[in-house]
Length: 107
Image 1: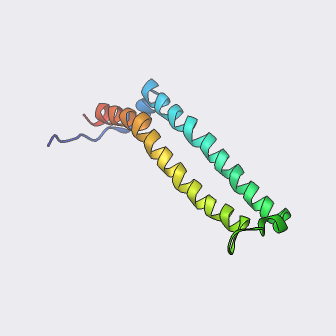
Image 2: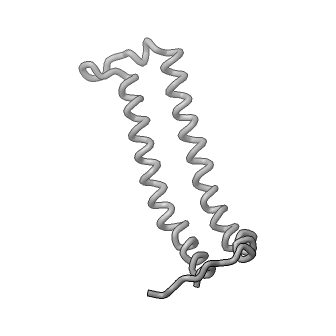
Image 3: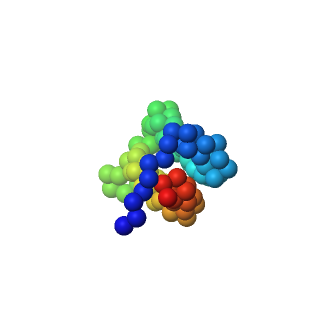
């Protein structure tokens, strides 16, 4: 196994301002910020609807499962879906860039 070297603090600062690192950061932010905002809005809508339309949220769908329970469970499903989507995105768009930067820094 090839031994990796420890980059110096100066090398870290230089990499932080490099085009490769800026591209990696940009790719991450282009996914993370919109997805975070979308999920936050979805959560706030859920809370607001539960607060101001509680009668509607209490409407039964199947047996004892009402709209509120369905939307609550959908929050969990959405969380797992976002996690899966992020993993696919990261493996395709972030990991190769991170590996290239790591190789360049550690040798």
